[in-house]
Picture 1 (cartoon, helix red, strand yellow):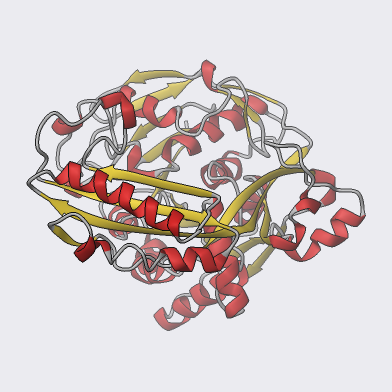
Picture 2 (picture 1 turned 180 degrees about the horizontal axis):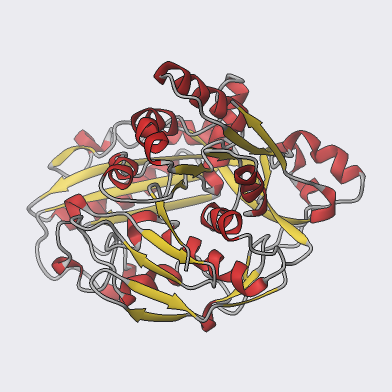
Length: 451
């Protein structure tokens, strides 16, 4: 039975740069996927593109490709990445330039059409309201503040690009799971309405989408015994035409692949376990059967799925005011008491200045900041703590004024401030997330091959 090996070397923009190199050089794989995007990432990229039309994609991707492309060409490894962000064409051009300098002839597939920010007014005039999935409000209530709007495409256009001979596929916003499902659809010629197979590929993509989180990273189960985390192996799926697959990693790498670890990843961002909705299908996570099939090998079978919906999800971001966050470090003795006193003092000063914020938040890191009241008051004299204080407001001037109130506590407040935890606070724009749906009939992905 035909088997393809699909590895994922990036779980987010900022993941370990050595992971893709490790996957390509330390064992055999057929596909390398790289997942860079999150909702906040799209708005950051849109800002970058507005400042310079050449930007708006994950720049880390280009030097990574430069390091691994010769080996990928030699071993016929295909790469699929959503590094294109809001500018997949510029990303593809940068990769094409890398290939030219290396003397390599490479076909690059581009999946675009997901960026609809310039078409929003047209679409709204045609009756699409883009109602917020959480609140039901129409997008018109924040239309003037919108910064980005991207449709989540699925695996089908990735498969189309591979069908046309692309060795590297660069997408804009697509589902994380689609990066792995697309190669399976291409290799196994799966029908686009075989819901059980598409669901199996979707779950395979979900298991590896966060990179080393499947192979022992960020693992809650007996984490201290996981070997060689410093050299952790990133996940590989060995996929078969019948929809069964095995999760593993390269031999000789650190980390651990177990049923318990795979289960942890399965429940990550899952929502309704019986209805994991993607553009390609609806996957039923309760149908998944896991079994340990050897050292660092977990076999997955029994996956069931249902028909895809008639909608795409749309990820929209919009401006929502300003924020600033700052911190002070207090040391022993009485570090916790000093931080609490400084917190109260700062609040009184802000109030006396007439500064009213939409929200104020303080926490004492090192003394129950994560668990709040669940852990109770500290029972010992803590060596040092960090007082973190944040404000949020539509009024930029008020936030700016707050940024000048933290440092004075060093000399006019409780003693033994060891320093500002992150320098003077900086005023930043707040980007809010607006999830919505739109009919698939209103938009279509655009697949292009260059090179």
